[in-house]
Image (tube, rainbow, N blue to C red; front, side):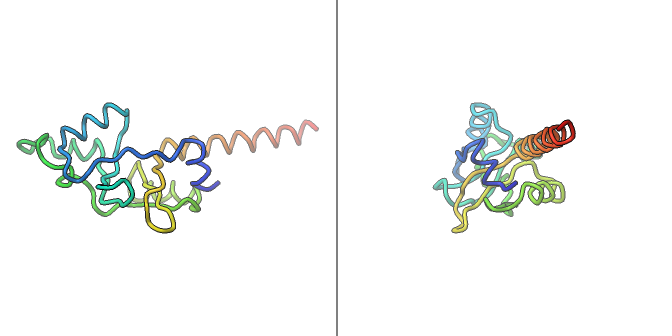
Length: 141
């Protein structure tokens, strides 16, 4: 299964925050959309970084954290994938790099969606259930 199939099921809308947004604004967006991470982008097309709940927690001891810009706590070196990447390869990337959210970039490099570890696990479970049903039908004739 390819990532494009995951996006076709879940949608390709991506909530993003501009690099200059405050951490307080970021936290409000995470809460409002019930998300664990946001793409950092000034235009919603080009990825400047990614910021997660984990990034906020890592900086909690810093003074005036909520007033700082998102760019101060975001991860700039973003792991990404393409719509044609396999779900298995993205799962391996997430495991190897210890990330839970991966932006999906179109062939031109613009933001095409985002997948979470939950999205890829859900797609794998659905694929396994389909294969199990096919095998049961085959065996039971």
